[in-house]
Length: 299
Image 1: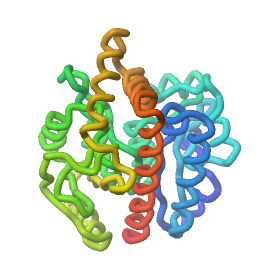
Image 2 (image 1 turned 30 degrees about the horizontal axis):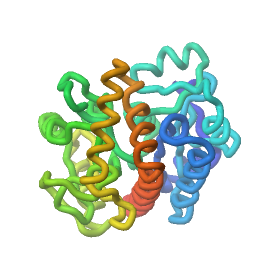
Image 3 (image 1 turned 90 degrees about the vertical axis):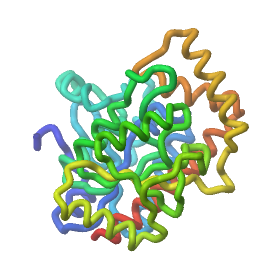
């Protein structure tokens, strides 16, 4: 394992000295946004983390090595090289053995962060149960059930079946905590009609919930849902028609599996004339800010 996992000097130092670390995923760089927005966002997220005295650990697969923490050159490579793949947990064995490079999904990043001993992870939105196909369940949910990591996100992606996603999370005993919200946010949208089982109105309360979860020896991760700032949110009346249009186009092209989500996000960006990309950037920055504060509070 040690020969496959490679730690940046900053992450290695933080681990050795028990300093706070925040895990960040890399599919937002490789498949979530166009260049140069992807590179600019990735570097901004790392800087937000450092500004709060936390070490950023962006995770990716580069030439057969699982990198825990990336250099500027590695971030730039992932942002620009079109041959870089997309890796979920199931892909890691194959891609490592074949010396491939890939952005890590939420599922793969969760697995890698847990194995590296990193307890807090910030991302944009998690995957879930897809609309129209109850059997199409994101591996993100499985990994949340398996890995005791606190995951900060802006809810499940709006392109998903939210009620069924919530049902899956409940079935697998994954706690959902709303940060300053009593209802589920849905990525681009800061609220939905789905009431949450728990709320924390400040980082101290949130930290206590996370610590208690771990003290109880509960094996699952925790899902902390942090709404997109209201000023950057897209109303449901605007985003829903865009999502339906994108879903229809995906159906016409028989898209499924790991190709589906990037396609839908790209189509929604086209339909909203880039408004969804700006919202995506705003929400991920907001999540990283909260993730850094939580990592610092946990120590």
